[in-house]
Image 1 (tube, rainbow, N blue to C red):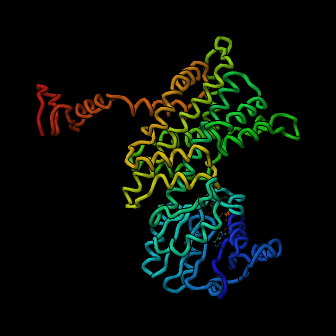
Image 2: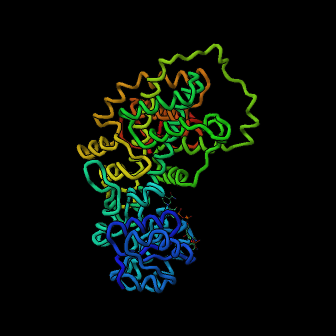
Image 3: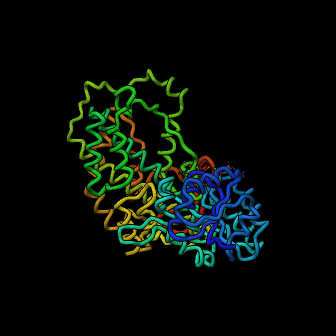
Length: 475
Ligand code: NDP
């Protein structure tokens, strides 16, 4: 037994993570259900470092130095359970199984509890950055016991992406499912970010009438400022790309139906359970569903819209769109962090929100300059209540809000859908409102269902006798 760590599941992610470990000087045991992938890795990349190719699970586990560390990179779901069980059978107390797949955090909690009973450590970890990130340095979000992180952490940190200040984008997020939870919200924020960028593009394209190449230049320019991020950068690249076959803009030959693998949906489902309004992520998830709703889109094709001739939009709006994008993006992150904070309280995870933001600075899809400011904001005041209340962001929004409002109003006027921009603005206005119409809703609920209400001027619960003399009862 000579390997420092093992990786089982050698499709794109597992293969590249195994190579990443090996390139960092570790001896890596490799295993895959079908041996062909293992052989292929050895043939193609065996010279990159020290690999121990194994054919069976028993051999794989045996090749690991104790306490053993075996990382699973297989399809999330039942495949993961199958592999965990196979590994556990051959392991001994104190050994560790790491799941780097996109597991649902509830599965991770269940698996961690079950393996703990068998004296095995289980670390569910979020890995972000896709194929390239896995090889060159992903953002890594490990959950599991602190004891597990003590020995595994340094290895993960050595293969992780590094932020500009040299810090690895990997730190212990919290117990059991905390790592996979944070990865899930990361993906939800990614949905939101992409939707907002999509809306900005749509406004420049259909609202103002600019061509993709020009819009690409605008995004490239925006990427030099506070919007500086991986997603803005690749947006500029995609928009500049020309389809070789037709000579058209690449974006114009793609079917406009956005697919999803489900992490956005998980984020929204969990947010509904926790009662956290993540409207940005929800709108982004539903916008993808709307784009793919063939039947409804076909049925609605003839519906009336505003007369385009009457609604010229000038290029003055370009900078307004940039500001609306930034403001909406701040809201999306504020909501995502609210969800992490709520889950952390619910599951006793004690997650450091600032540390979370710093994990995402490099390696992952939502990497962005502005994450440093989020870390600073939570660092300066962990009891902020909302990221929007941090001086950094409240003043940024104060400066952008006129633009933001103009963009949402213009979009409504010209008929370009902006569910992300609009819902973010409504959320912002909702939060800052002194009084909300929720008071009226409580009145309605009391009227039809005797659901009771509280008063602003005294403690207690009250009900008005709506069907009788309308006197108020104190309950
Ligand atoms: P896939 O999700 O396509 O999974 C393929 C791998 O799973 C193969 O090694 C396959 O083995 C193995 N596998 C499938 N079913 C079983 C089973 N029942 N028993 C044993 N092994 C099985 O691979 P990816 O590399 O794309 O992703 C791996 C994990 O990483 C997934 O959970 C994914 O969600 C997650 N992830 C992926 C990212 C990406 O960008 N692709 C980014 C971050 C995380 P075989 O070769 O024998 O078929």
